[in-house]
Length: 441
Image (cartoon, rainbow, N blue to C red):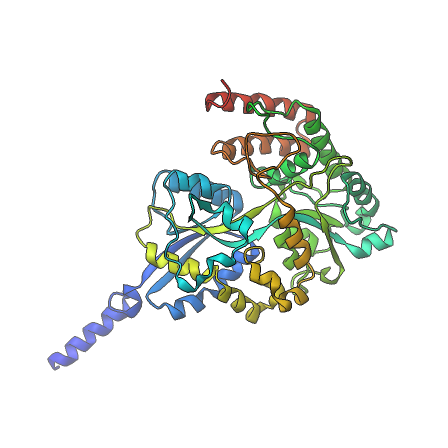
């Protein structure tokens, strides 16, 4: 055996072991993300990125929403370094940027067109003029409803519906014998799950989390009216086990034809109208988020799921290259070519809502943009407040406080507590935490 043969054999063995192969020198990005449909789709298209960037590999960690929030918060606060890219909301971005936990996204490239980002979305991800996360998709909240069930019941969705109308309509179209619930709403506990909806509901009832001196307001009539309405409606017209249902669970129910109405994120519109996955795709109508009669506030929900790089990552250049790809206009074109224009990530770029192909393919495009433009997170409530945020309160303590209150309210939906008891406990617990944090002197 010649020396050349020995060397070639050794090289082949090393390559087979993954030590001497081309991929061995590739940088691996670990990305934590939520198990929502658009993110799942992104994972399926990642090979397009790695094909163009063979020196970068991607490892996905896909988690349920509440679990994702818990893990990335723990990791970034402890500088654990498990993730190179995190999927986080516009709640976390400004708070974490000010803590010095996120890298400025200054390496997205000249072709990225940052000025095309919708101003409201970009503003929520910017601190002191610097961008700390790039939006993958943006959303507000709206009503998705079954036009066929409304027609059968002799109902017409108003241009600006009230909760009073929604309650009557939901009860009227409920048909337990046909497994049709009049309405599906979030009941799963979590500051970003049931409390996203319930906070928006309370805002539209004229309620607020805190007064101008940071005193909790759960002892006020607006909260009592809003929570009682929600609980009664879920009992009369909601699905069984509603206290365990979050965004994904309600999406499945609606797609299966088991919900007459669903109030949730506008991003869901592409999934409920997709004939590949929705049995009611051609029967869906859209309307603006309701308000209580006499209250001029439609909930002011504004959210975006965003990709950010923690300062603990040692792969900032590669991470920003991936983020630039995943949140670019070119990625939108890629999704459109594979899945159709109706299924592209919405709510982040002005150019998308000027695209005639998109507007033609997506009947929900105009209602989505109108809902997002109507949201003003700087003035989320009717009464004056010392905070911003819309369906959340933009303070670091809200993550723990909101989840605690969410657990109390979810227990009411499950029949384990009463509205009065849950509100009293929410008032006491939230006041204690706000005093401990120094907001209340």
